[in-house]
Length: 391
Image 1: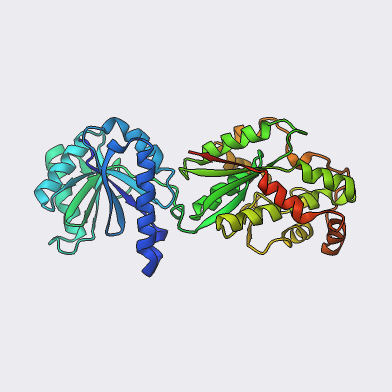
Image 2: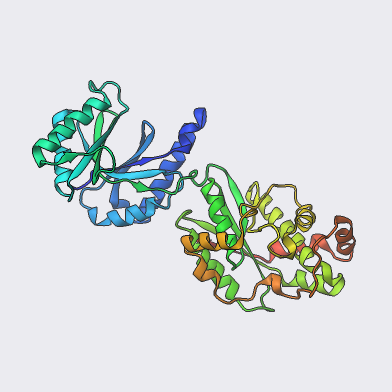
């Protein structure tokens, strides 16, 4: 049987109390957006029903089901979903549809799992299980097995209808992108920052990306890599904005006018100033980075403290407690790892001293920055930055 609808279940959204409708509406809108990337003619409608989002499929577009499945498996906010057959709330229809669905499968044992959300339906869940199960035994000559059956037939009784299906597909969980506002994501061509971006979007934030590059002192490989990485991340957020900031003028000033041991920390302080300014421009409320505690010289507790002292908005480090292998494993699952390991010339590796400071102090850094025209350097970097939209 061809499915008529898709039921999308969520988990965390159901705990949002009076704000629940806001989260449900955003999830519904995001599902519409992602299905529209496949084709506006693959579905007829997307709307809320009790505790679920219901998608009505176009009857003539079932060749797109695999694409729809892939899209929904990457839509944050969905706990799981199923392609279902919608039938009237009559036992004869529910039993007949269950028989038809199971007749297309190879199995010997089965169970029925029903959920009666609509309390106007006269039979409780246990009675539905018994009657549908009896119909399967009589019609298909199969055996009931409640633990570890070959197949499970699900019956959801909700919204004056019954939905029958045999397969559930896992969603990514989290919150719908957009419900948590905007955030700046500092993205390099490396392994860590794309994973941090994933976690930002999973918690409902709309990511605005910033990439710092040192062209013409380096090649454009890191810019090309970042574009590719965002194309991968775009499956979670259909439209992405990218700021490309030329960082080499600032690096040149730091190299010429300040002590070598402080270069890396000074680089990072300028990056955070620029990210903060762009956050204000974009009305974003946080900055996400791919930092992991102790991974490199700039990521000691002391240096992170002195670096973020130049900002007044939250700095989010979702990878802070992960070791490198855990980050690599996540990057592989996302599909960003193979791009990240391609050779490039990262701006932070330019003019790096042999012995960078690992325990910097704010007073020392402020003395070094007195040698620089900090405000003008930041303003010029933002003014000269390029903006791209990746759709």
